[in-house]
Image (cartoon, rainbow, N blue to C red; front, side):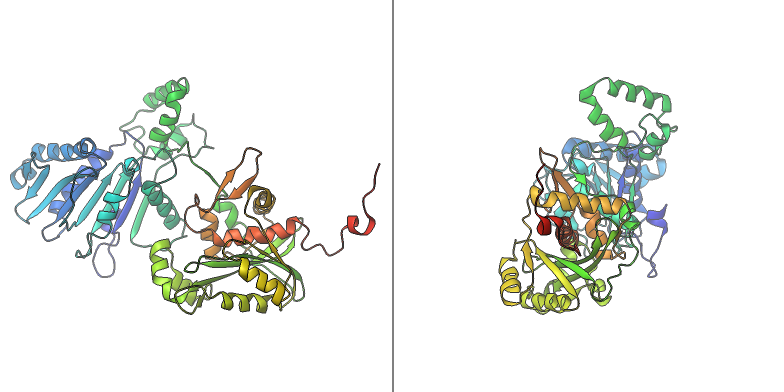
Length: 473
């Protein structure tokens, strides 16, 4: 098993966190119970503390009681371990260890020093309180292990979805974390739901603990009961019915990774997404047109003194990216707007800058300075549906048609993978920063730049309507 068999060069366990998403009836409780007992008696940990965490007492009892049954059924375990059911504890006197069942509704978690932490059905947790208590509770341990085993939640939100999203990004190479093992068994909404191959994507035990015929009967019944259909998709196929719409598939984005080429003297647009004072600022340069395709280059800035906090908060390797020249660090612990201004002026002076398109949030003063004092052609892009729908749809079309060249910038790739779009009643769309999966600033800057293309920002010839006027028929 990869979780325990793979070791770091130090000899300690490589994987310190693990996320397993799997549909119901695949033997999840049995697996958790066996892992808990392994961590108690065979992990070579002094005074091991293993916690079985669930949202409430009844859920916590499920796994704990399965572990108790294993102890009672095994002469070897029965002779070594003590079960104290009144306290919800399994004790190993040989190494002063214990398994403790635990729930979010228990009053206190003081004094814990977990060597192993298991979260069962994380999607049911409505708050982060228990998760946060255990997040840093194992700092005194050399190789603590945190395991999450869950089915999908009702919405793409909350700590369970953070862990799914993080796992899939690690697996896709978007986040470089060699200590995390993420395994997600799930079907897609676009899959053929009548195919056993689709069922197997979320149910690796299909044909073993789950019969294909039984699954087919449950599927047919769910189709006839609208109130059950959503639960079936979520619990048996790990398909989330509610939630927002992702902007794009990362495979489509990756097909556009050819390097951008902006020739000297070629006209271009700039799109700026200026951050809060302590966060990431992004600038996009766009050349080309909406018909033949566009070339996009990116610049990012972060306040140097805040980079460690931002790395922890965003779970991204900002220092490594800065060493690679992908991020410029500005002095101090807040973004230096004058530094950004000088960078924009330097870039704009290297060619024919037709427009600088700016999200006015946080940037009104900088935009006015660039326009009135520096003479740049600044336009503010209001962040509503009417202003952003056309460039957002145009960018999507360019990506799907393979007519964007972004060079595979890893920061922009991460932001693209995070992006969620929302739609109004008229069918207009825009990126939604609050509902997106963490940072999307680079993609937002790119949309601002494309907004200039949508309004003819790089037309080499004047509009026929400007030279001729309107014709009436």
